[in-house]
Image (cartoon, rainbow, N blue to C red):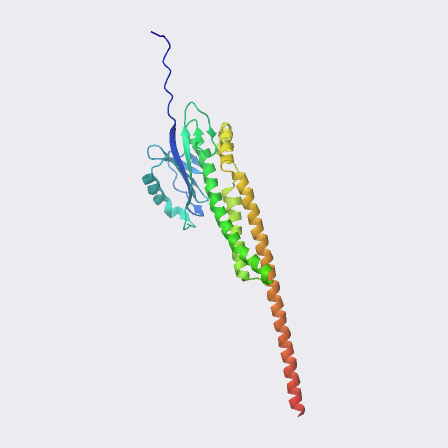
Length: 272
């Protein structure tokens, strides 16, 4: 008989689904703290037997390892805390593949490989997913504004007259400013998650998540589009103002001519 010890069977990696849901413009998590809170910014804690939840103030909830029923139940619990709800809930889904003998890695278009499901690693992945789904929502809104602006610019080039009103242009500027505020102030894509202060060894995992979802590239593209929207809307507003001023001047000239004609008629009648 051979004395060679048996080769241990390779364990099948465990897979867990993580979902990021953009529920609205803001999410107030104040008062949801509990004894087993993992993080306060974002507020993160365990749910059920093996679930994990992270709540972000820019209206995103990241749910890891929850069943569809548990997800629906949790969303119902926090729905009253969401403001600025949208008709459509954007979502981002990732598969986490856990292998104790593996390393933190991400295959292009494949699962996110993780050594374990420690709360710190989950916070790193949740941060990337939350930023990605929020960027997706903002990209969709900005593209919608660009679709509105294009006919305005096309009409101006075709007729030489601004189609639309100043109020419409100001509304477009307002939409662009709201997205700018979200990206720069609330979401802060360029900022790294707080957990990296205590766990600098997870920097590589965060860099991989950031690259996988192209967070920096998408942010730069979004900002360029926002700049184009604001500049175009300002230009169209100026054209509308100039056109209105021209019409006002023409009206004044007509009134002056009318007054002169009326004066001449009165003088003629008076002399007769």
